[in-house]
Image (cartoon, rainbow, N blue to C red; front, side):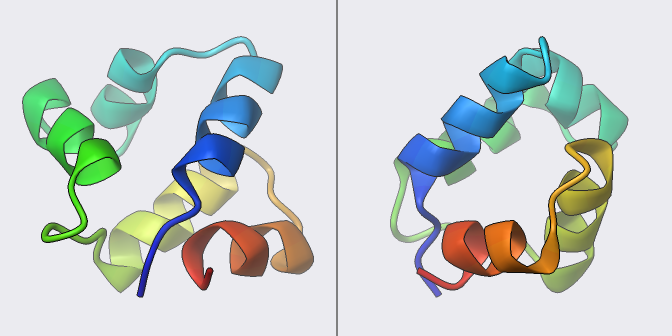
Length: 69
């Protein structure tokens, strides 16, 4: 699965958060989160996707557009 990084970054900013803050809320090292945002080789786990969707209050449609691109 490929993450729509631009949409995810937009939602993070829209909520007034940073990637670093979201990483902490997901209990992930910020460098790991950053690599997953930049790399097509590393993917978010299903659990991480759910936690990010909850943190950002994403609708199902938004989550699908971001994580199932």
